[in-house]
Structure formats: structure tokens, C-alpha cells
Image (tube, rainbow, N blue to C red; front, side):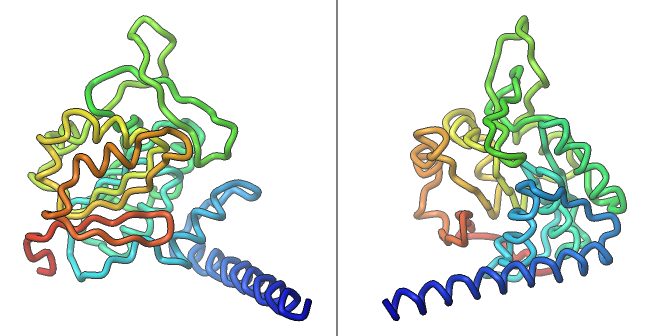
Length: 245
């Protein structure tokens, strides 16, 4: 009984500490970014905590990236993190859902290095429907539909993003797209995967079976180092060019 009590106290105090740190951090970063919109009673708070307190996008190497693609940019919290950590990088933030995109625009309005794309990342040019899975603001998913259907937006591809940028490589590709990673790693990935140096990805097998299988079938671990941090898997190309200069 005593062991259970101490374990309960430890968990309770850890949660309290995280909540206090989150409160302090939110007010600090609201001053730093101005604006910083975090919607109360939404998944925004958990995303903020993961990025700015748990530092899930910190890398085990020092780099100075030129191009960062933020696929599943949500409300721009990851774009803000990257903008502050890598102020000289070009950041392309891709987000399909209307309410998240509106907050994304506001949160990144002060950053001229952030380009916004209202679309969904896919393996090919297609028409997409945004699906509300009733799991919070961070869990909208995409479904491919026919052009004659009631679609919400047209897809973009990694190749499209690179072609429309002044760069020939993506230094950091962040992918958090609620299961659509299965689609982009299942088909047409050979043309762009060799042009990426670092991948942050969250796998969503809990929503869509086969996400991890598609990613690991595409990524040859003889060519990449793999790390795990929180819910993110990090792949860093072994022959990565020196990005520290």
C-alpha cells in the first residue's frame, strides 16, 4: 500500500510540475512570438508542451538547414520552433484544415521566412476531403476522392514543394499527417526521398494500419540513422552533407 501511495504521489507531482512548466512557458513564448495563439481546452496545449517543453524537435546533431518542410503544420507551433532555432531557414508549412490554417496564419504572421501552403501532402496530384475523426483539433485526416465529388482541396506532393522552391534538397522534412504517411511512402517516393537529409515523422498505425510498414519499406536503414523521441521517429541520412555552415 505504501509503495502504491508513493508511486501515486510521484506521478501526481510530476504532472503538477509539467502543468506549472507549461503555464510558465506559454506566457514566456507569448511574449517572444507575439502573437502566440493556443486554444484552451484543445490539443493545442499538448502540442505546445511536446514542442517547447519536451523539445521533441531537438536534433542530436548541429545543423544550419536551408529548407524545412513542415507537413501537418497544425497551428504553426512547430514552424515557430523551427523559425526561432533556425532563423535563416526557409520554412514551408503545409496544413489542410480550415480552423487550424487560420491560427497558423496568425501565429506565423511575423515570420517572413515561413511560407504557408493550404493543402494536404499526398503521393500524387489528387482531390482530398478533410475528415473530422472527433479526436481533437490535431486529428483531422485526409481521404482521396474523385474530382466530381465534394472535395475540400487539391493535394500537393514533396516533388511539387521542391519544384516550387529555390532549393534542390530538403534539409528537414517534418511529417505529422494523421495516417497520410502511408500514402506518401507507399508510392512515388523514390524521386524525392533521396533529396531529404532529415525526417521527423509520427506514425499513426493506431488510426490506419500499415503506416509503419510503408515507411520502413521505403527507408533503407543501411542509409539512415534512426532515433526515437516521444511520439516522433527521427531519420538522419548517414552520408549527410555538412549542414553546420
